[in-house]
Image (cartoon, rainbow, N blue to C red; front, side):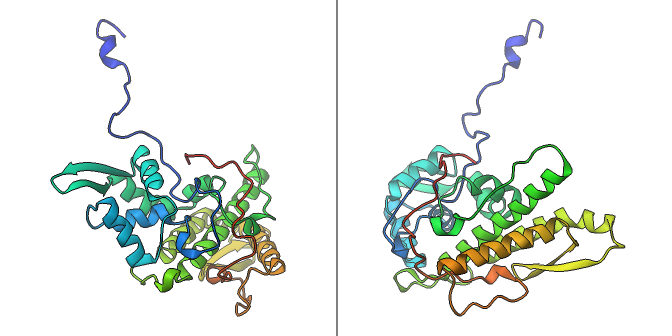
Length: 286
């Protein structure tokens, strides 16, 4: 490194780290069966409220209730986690301590959280009602195209589970507060996931364009894939998941399966055993 080697030593960035944390719930392991205590979208909702202006903790608590009907189990704990992973920052002003979304937090909210790659990494570190994932069996991503294809199909199924639960949470009017269309995040998240899936499947479609294709409708959008391909396998996994949910009684009775345009799947407001969470390792980090 020469005489100036000391000048080339890598040092920590004191402003930002390379960690991109899980924006969904991983720290509230159980709670009462009440929608206003819901932790699944709490950190995303915090970023939504701080996206327009800086707020004090009390103002943020009021905004969460006004817009979403949410009462946090422990707002201070959620804020400490978000500050630790630099999704929000705090500044001292004459009005007191103000909370602000960082550029990193804005990117996670408006982009990363709507991609299949991000959701695949955080899915297994997110706490869901146990009934929704009890039947889920995943595939390791090992060498070999067959293993990668199965892993990809499982990733698509996992994204479907997360989307269905997200949609159910947003449909539930906590404390009679209906989430406005401009604040709903299911639509943009669904569109981002479908776009990710489309990018995965299109090369396969072009490669075997002479073969028959089947239409797989995921989240109200059309995705085409070759027969017996990744999308076909993902569709089978999704169908098995829906069948499990039906058997557990956690699907809205008004929901009727069609050609599996499953983004609009409706879960009942209070699925059985909703207070129990997945028996998975839940730790910070994506």
